[in-house]
Image 1 (tube, one colour):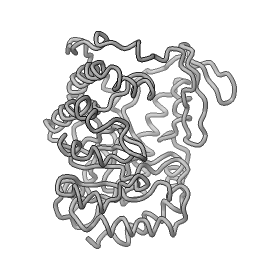
Image 2 (image 1 turned 90 degrees about the horizontal axis):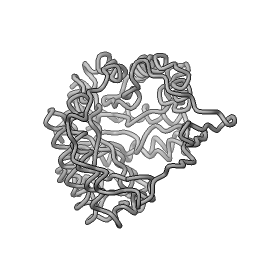
Image 3 (image 1 turned 30 degrees about the vertical axis):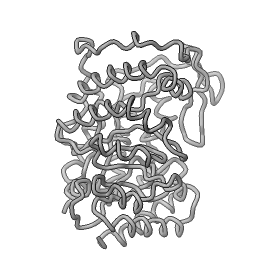
Image 4 (image 1 turned 180 degrees about the vertical axis):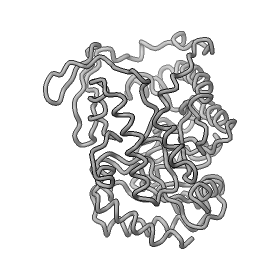
Length: 383
């Protein structure tokens, strides 16, 4: 089997010649250690500032070339997402540069304030003067979507992801983009969004109806020729369980999730769902929606591959198993032991892809990353 065939079979819960390996996303510090030079790939601070400076083409070229170089150098990933080479701003994009307040703070023309987070290597909005409240949202704000409102995207926004398909998609499985997932919609910030489910669920449903119709139309453009599957994303839970009750999810989220998955599958795409946290109370609905592979096995939240397979392995493939906490804070021996345990548990049933529980996050120790690859390569053929 080549990597493409191997992942396709694993997601279909069919026999494979070796356990596949894939990363949800790899951040810039690990990529730079592998390729040996600076990159804008997943450098969320550096890329944002470069876009402000009008260096859009420079950033996109880095996304293209450095992503390919990284995956060619490690040469063991069967499944590749678009997260390192994502949808990009159109050619000619040059936004108005926010006013720099100090070395770590910027303010845009709308008064929103952004500060550097060096721990996660990103710019975080710490103040928004226009943050909406529950009372600001009404059903009338979300009328039925009219296709005449939709303008097809500029083709240049697909430069990076199309390049990945061209250079790596011949034999690697590419899990690409789509119109996006619509299910657990938060209107406003997290607090306001959660309050909406309790106080104005009819507005949440109206927003979901409109967003789903638009996302279904976007599939026509965003699902790219040559990709093998679609990565859908929606973080619906925390470590202690779902953010809303299963009953609330079933009424306000599940119908729209089903419609989105059906649209994606109409393009003959396999469906992979990234969803952090303890989602076991929602897992039957995730299966009912038509998801084929579940990613983000957060063991610290009870999402352990063996127990998940025991309960849902006849309906779902699972991708993950290596703790991001150990990759960041553990030792190489810790990571090797974790890889062995995950592969031993995962290989008991069909439909297992090894990978990190979340991402190869910023701050991952390089020696831990290499230990994960080395231990995987020692054991992958023992299916």
